Length: 93
Image (cartoon, rainbow, N blue to C red):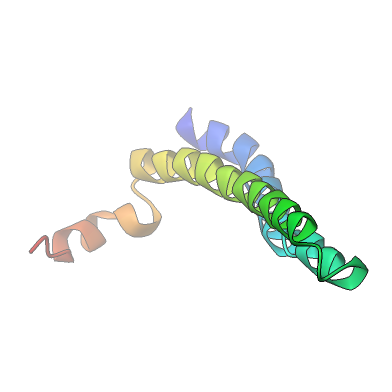
């Protein structure tokens, strides 16, 4: 059942990662635009910097949400970093 759900979620996980990465890259655009239009307007610079932080925050939110769900699937299926051999060799100190 978990394998089936993970298979259905794989496309969503990939899409959220692509959108999150794109948002983190696009977050710099408002700052660049504000410098191009009027670099002496401090209020515009601060507003665009804030807009960039909001855009980057949305991208990080997507990374976090999909990463938690994907990680839970890996834990349940004991795959990736959660295989028995990796857990056996892992040092906690």
